[in-house]
Image (cartoon, rainbow, N blue to C red; front, side, top):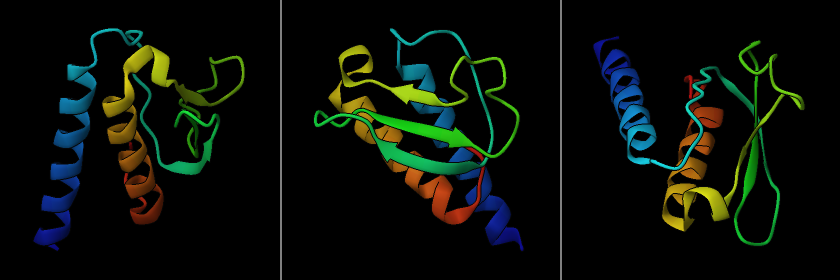
Length: 92
């Protein structure tokens, strides 16, 4: 059980370090378990839908990660985090 708690903390720290490194992103934080990840464009942009009501105040109820706004490397990192959250059931 301690190993699971460590993994969860590690994932949260990884997520926080990623979001803190993105300077051009909007200052909105949404946390929840990922229910769907879909590629949105050939450049690697993608959409994340959460199982919680975290995105209820958004127009389309999903988070869009756009390469032109946050850069290719940050988008790849976010995509990895989203797929990890989807497969492990941890919050993103």
